[in-house]
Length: 184
Picture 1 (cartoon, helix red, strand yellow):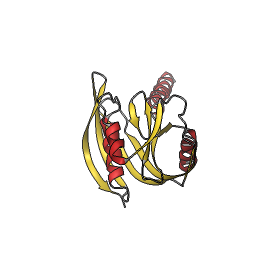
Picture 2 (cartoon, one colour):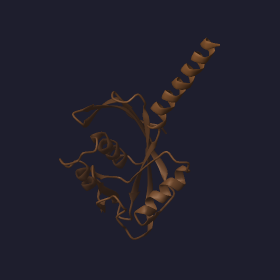
Picture 3 (tube, one colour):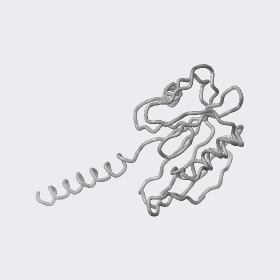
Picture 4 (tube, rainbow, N blue to C red):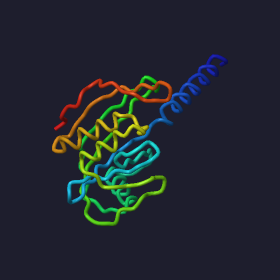
């Protein structure tokens, strides 16, 4: 009886620690490339620098609803989003890997507005957008810029790739594990 009790406690605490390890870090990040009629792309400025709008969540929502709601936070109505990239982030400082999905859509209507917790939003040409994501004060991992750059240069292809993230002195660097490759 005592052995059964100890086994039950071991299983219970083992499952609890597993759930905590994966549950707190299980979220999705979906980035949205929004193009206007001039071929410019929308960037937001936040505490980490300039980048495409992103949706980070672990809530129950459909892909389309989540992305359409994200666009509406910027005051814009957009076409139905299309997948442009699926990437894997592995990490030497976390025990889990995470997917990053990128979508693109076209601006249909609306007036641009700065969402709460953002510093600015603007339309940029592709070359200017890449320049803005490369500013020296950028705190975001450069892998975000490099993935976005690839998607902006080759928008007709759905891309995949895998990156290993490392953290040293609070700064994140990356190495390419699987270089960009077409998924379609």
